[in-house]
Length: 243
Image (cartoon, rainbow, N blue to C red; front, side):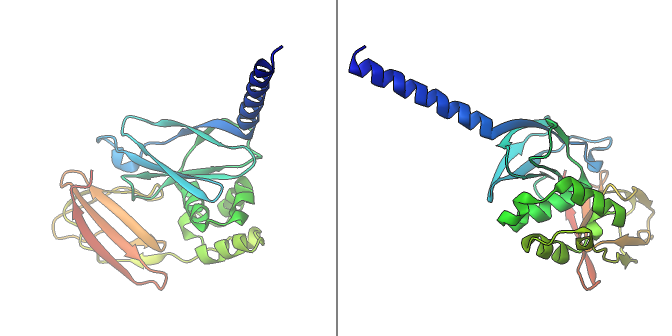
């Protein structure tokens, strides 16, 4: 065999070996995005899908006709995934860890709370979290994962001290006297029911975790946001033509 031919064969073998190694380091999973509450009896909405590869964040647009997305992820690290409806609403989420043997993962809002927090940490310690156990521990303490104390959880993850004690429940804030226009209002949260308001009425009393809470009235094409701060103070905003 000529020297040039031998070199070509060796290069081909090295290329094949590299491709095989790369395939072994990654796997492809299917992500299932559920219907958003605002899609009830209405048009589908689009999503912005965000995930990490190591401490690097990636994103892709998901159009309103797509409910399942294929994602290529590292086998040996935890990947956090958040699907943001209309780019900014509460995300549906999950995490895929090296311990997960499944290939199909359904996203949901409660897991989205935890996934968003850990995705935002951007620290190597987040890549070793046993997410399934974290979800189990959170479910024992919280009826709504939005009630978790984010500072305590993230501090323990950052310091490598994650345990059952890392899940600390905050008290929801009682919200009253908010002036909604008349109509049927659909909350974005899966933990709340839609409600109707008649002319001259205020919205029903709500108990909300800290953060942003959105309500949509389809017949008016109007959104109302209630923003609850960590000190229990809340305010509201009106926006239009959101869906």
